[in-house]
Length: 232
Image (cartoon, rainbow, N blue to C red; front, side):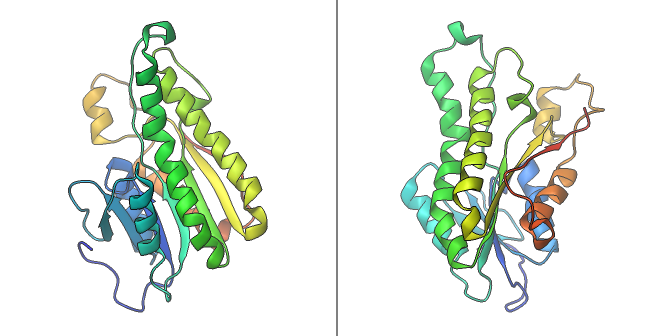
């Protein structure tokens, strides 16, 4: 565990946020902490502050199962939400110029951790009487551009997984939705695109508000939705 977290007995429900140490994930984690959630964040190298941090490899099923058990391990704060933000972006050539290993790497980055985390946490959500799963896709899955077929296809696969999960777990009281942002205004994106027009970029804080809403009881009638969070 790392950083300053809520006092014992004050956190009545838990959320697992993957990718919670990144530019978007930090904003999402803070929003959940401020809303009173016990917020569990896996990390690879440097533990994030202000949350319940646990070192993990989200590509490894055993490690993911351990994270899920830790997130669900406090009876007075049952696991009620899972937020899948972990992923990555890669540009390349067109399809005939891209080795299949590079194409598949984007699925290992964007889809495999989401699938493993969902598979490991769903039994805990069901045991807690239901809950919410929120997955991160991308506007590129709906509005493709050249040179990123692996990224685009893997993010489209996240949407298909959300649709499948929403149907499979509806009777268990588990809602599953996707957020579909455009370009996110993070330091990494500003550094990689210094000359870009940022007028239609979306802030991490705006995405965080949407995710916290989807995780909570206020969105109890929403499942299987692909929510655009975009200014374009």
